[in-house]
Every structure is written in structure tokens, then in C-alpha cells.
Length: 165
Image (cartoon, rainbow, N blue to C red; front, side):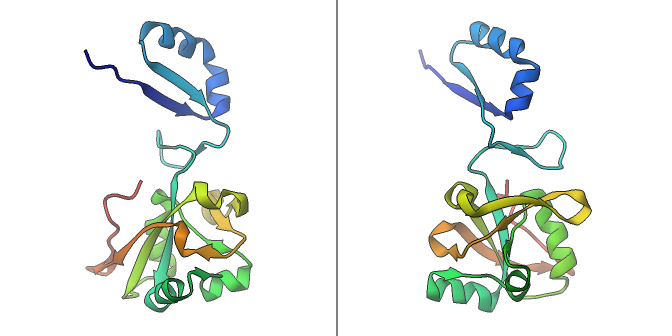
């Protein structure tokens, strides 16, 4: 027999609102573990839950990415320096960010950042369309980058990797 342990992470307020269902589920399904995590965030996409340690994304111009690789850290793009923090997007926000701020730009890269690694200096603040966006109030270190890939321009629009979650 194979034993499987399933952890489901929900925002704390969600667990409180239907806590009795979770208690019963744990009794009915052996190995089911419902976790309440106050750091869980939900973006604007229906039924999309990002757990603590989610990836957030930064779009870099080629020279900005090269600078981060060479120096091991960056204060960000000119707009980041002007605003006093480094702008990031969630997976569901990244395409709109590219469309609005990088339309037609070539030689871009998208980097995935583990939010768990930078959580101390990361703030979620209301921005475009009333949505909360992640902003980093510190230098971004290369060691915080989980991965980075080229962001090709396909028929006038940037094509993001399907692995973005």
C-alpha cells in the first residue's frame, strides 16, 4: 500500500469561515492535512490560490538582466529607482504589465523570484486597477532568482512561459 499525505493551504479567514468542514474532511480522508496560513495570498483570478513561497515575476531589459548577473544585485530599472521600490507582478498580472510598460520591446527577460526569500522587504500594495502588486523595498539579489528566461515578442505581444504559476 502507498500512503499519500496531502497538504492543502488556505488563507486563515477561509479556514475560519468553514472550519467544521475541514475538521470532518480530515477524519474522512486519512492523510488529509488542512493548513491555515495567514501569509497565503489570492490574486484576482477566480479560484487561483498562491501559497506562501509563491513565485513573483520581474521583467528585465537585456542590459538590466546583465547588470544583475554581473553585480549579483540590483536596485532595479529607472522606474524602480524613481518610485523607491522594485516592481514585480504575479503570474496573472505579468502579461498586462508587459503590454502596458514594455509594448513592442525586444530582448526582454522574465525572472521568477521566490517571494519567501525576500518576504521581509516585500510589500503588497494597491496599484493598477485596484489590484495588489508586490513591491520590494530592498536590493534584489541574484540569489533570489529561481529562474530567468528570454521573453520573446511573438506577433507584437510578449509570450510568457507556460510554467508561470
